[in-house]
Image (cartoon, rainbow, N blue to C red; front, top):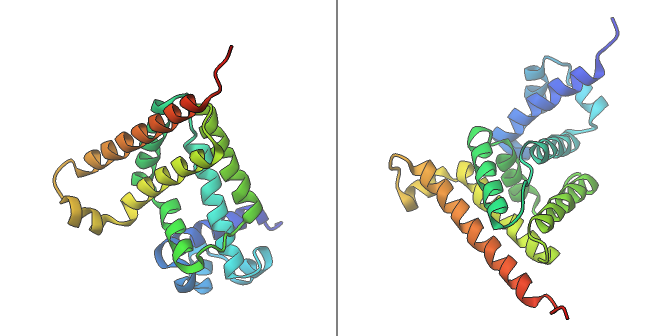
Length: 203
């Protein structure tokens, strides 16, 4: 029977995602990934090259999927607030992307993996933000997006800090979500107002 290469790659990516999310790049082990996938570890080297390249593939796949699952929809500050709320909700159910990004930042700093693909994804997200808030600059759109990502990604990754600062009361997650949405709505409205104020007057 012919070897199903794509299925094997999928099994390895799934197992590697679990391993990297739990242990990061340095703590992950090829042997554990191969055993979890039920695949000979030589397939990892054959398909991905090494552990670093496998981490690259995992994080690019996770972020590409996230782009498709949580798009920016609509226009105006409310659209960006809605996007932040949906991203927050997504991460409460699946914290894969936040965990991978935190590990990446801790272990690699500014060394970005999958650079061309990541740049294209980020540029697409910036363009969607500008479409939602016409007139704002690319830099302002980028600042808004990194604010949203920081607020939403930190929620599932820093639960202890959240509890220490805000308490662990019933309804805490809903209150945190409301705070994120409110913050993004205010920031988006401020950026839109600044952009409108700097538009040249028409005759």
